[in-house]
Each structure stands twice: as structure tokens, then as C-alpha cells.
Length: 82
Image 1: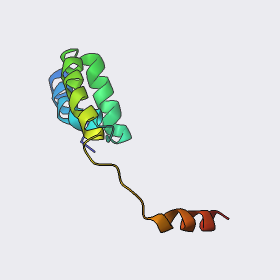
Image 2: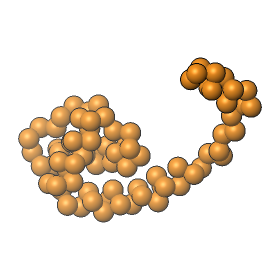
Image 3: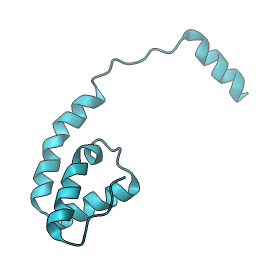
């Protein structure tokens, strides 16, 4: 979590800009998410910067190969659920 910026627009915009990658990846804390969303309202150029992260965050979703669970896992899960 970042410290809340002072109440001036420039520091809010800079703090929100620093958090854009984490926000775009959906990993921002609730406090940081609120700060970025406030920054997006008060600093219109941030919206374009956030949009530039969309292709990257989408690519990251599919960059790792699917995991194949071990065959015994299904049996253990079913047994634990019973």
C-alpha cells in the first residue's frame, strides 16, 4: 500500500500513475485501488495510460501453460468433500 498523497493534484496524479501497473493487473489493495480510481477521476490523462496496460495484462493471463493436476488429486478432493 502506498502512502496517501498530499492534497494537491500533481502528487495525486503521480501516486496514481505509480500504481497503474498493479491496478491494471487486479492486484492493488483496496486502499491503492481507491487512490487510483480517485486519480483517474481527477487526472484524465491517466485513463489513456491505464488503457495501455490492457494488452499486457491480457497477455499475462495466458502466458503460463495450464497446470495439469496430479491424477490422485481428484480422488483426494472427493474424499475430503465427502
